[in-house]
Length: 522
Ligand code: C2E
Ligand code: CA
Ligand code: CA
Image 1 (spheres, helix red, strand yellow):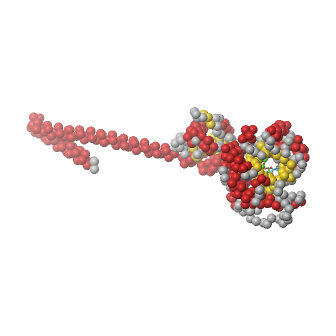
Image 2: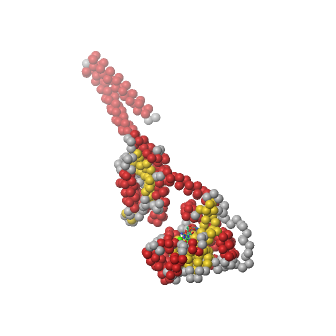
Image 3: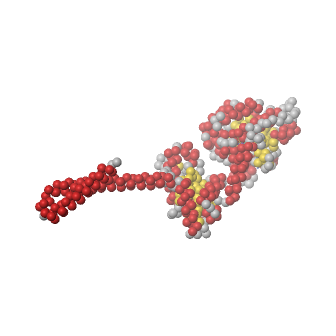
């Protein structure tokens, strides 16, 4: 609409100009210059109109150019936004996939290989929880800068998840050491405290590395291989790197299978309690049992808790698993001698649940097992996660008459301060110390020190892992009150334990028949 009058004016101006100019030429050639006098005004108007048209045209041209520039700018901005992570300035995952694929192709043509590094920060969630998201964000930006400074020129770097970074660069396949050195430098650089002005944060990273020449990779398989290697680095203890190895993919697959099998095994009652005898070291009397979970797998046989407890913890199945094991154990112990105790392991994950004491008490009421015969074992490590919550849970348990033991003492980080702050009834020295004592005088000194800490705090000490008489004698001499270990028999299931108790006349009077078989699981 706006173009119509301008067009008309332009055409009119040009027409007027042409007509007047034509008339001037005709009049001047016929009658001489003086005859052109009356045409001066029309000619001036035509010239002014032309000038106005030229000026308006210029203004329009500028306006159009400005709009075009703006449009181009915002398209470029959108393009940049769609490939870049705004926090770190790194590429995003999609861009990494696109540009990484091109890099692999290009490297192959130049007889080079491509290394893919997947870098994941260790325990970043804790940092976020502890210091807030703003600090978490600044940390990520700084980590990105640290990563950039270690990468060779022409590398691609992307933020592929919350605290996960992917980097790709070409290298000479005959010299993988160059990749190794970069990974080493990244690990040590990211393990240094990062100064964020107000606060300095300790973080570390686990790195997985995959190479395009060995994995015959598309970019997707390369990313997946580096991811698997990164998880292997985490499992090996974090703050390190590992190269992808096909065995890792098989192990991951097996673990995933185990995880889904475990999900079904808990309600199916395949996770059963075994009972590990605990002995009074002064008299040799049987005092009770530690309850240890076992997986009776229909095809694989017995699976040890070291394999399935970590899976249960990671996936949150531990609460159901523990409930099922406790219920079966309390039920099994109903007709045992009323002086015998049960010790139950509670994992760090369960200590995050403020309702844990109520859940345990409900199980005790359901099964009729008395609270004063129950002891809960909590590891040192579990305390550290949330000391205040642990304190309140331990307080509630104790109010109900349940005793609490500090498990695996010596392996974690608990201090005398913890021992004083939390009302433990007993300390358990980890079996690794008890077993190392013969060979290593340092562990003897440590076990001695733990026993004397126990004595000074008036806490009895249990020594785990007593396998022979010599170890028993040493632990007794060091002042340990209770002992546990293969010397007193292997942990065994409810039926065998019951048989053992019957032989020792340790079943409560009046109970002859075995308890009725009941579905106790879940
Ligand atoms: P833990 O609490 O330190 O349990 C003691 C471990 O030492 C048990 O291993 C037991 O079988 C083993 N043991 C006992 N005596 C000896 C000995 O003389 N020599 C040696 N070499 N070992 C001995 P297990 O049953 O494989 O349990 C491993 C860990 O799994 C336990 O360590 C505990 O942390 C965890 N666990 C077991 N059952 C449960 C459960 O129901 N819930 C939770 N949260 N954790 C459990
Ligand atoms: Ca234990
Ligand atoms: Ca232990």
